[in-house]
Image 1: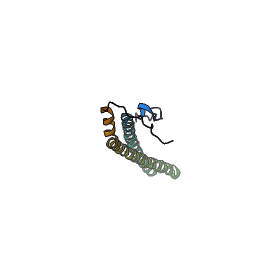
Image 2 (image 1 turned 180 degrees about the vertical axis):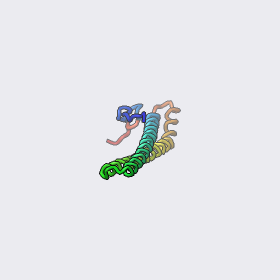
Image 3 (image 1 turned 60 degrees about the vertical axis):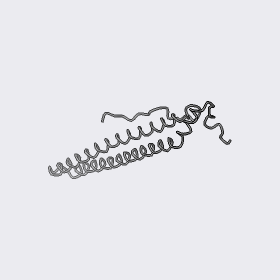
Image 4 (image 1 turned 120 degrees about the horizontal axis):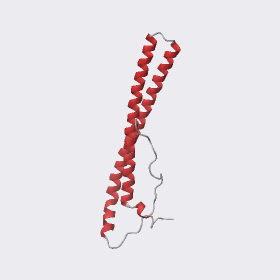
Length: 139
């Protein structure tokens, strides 16, 4: 395969100061979308490989049966083929979830942009700075 899944970032989201600003949220959502797209691609690769391996295992089982190998061995090879097919199906499901996550993250970016870009632009154009996020929070 060549690719490995590795943790990215710190796994925490800062919710104060500049880390909670308009561009920080946009960047965070964009990172989520990119990681989801990568998950989709890697899971798709795994699904294709597992399906290919399942087909090869089925062919091997057929050939061993034709060669009159003991039935229990043939059955075990068919079990392997079935397990690989199940793995392929689960990987396809993960790929589908990655796709859905990426689409949702992109929609969240668009919604965030539509909701807050005007406020961000007004704040930047104003000589008076706006209060930081959470300043007016009810406690």
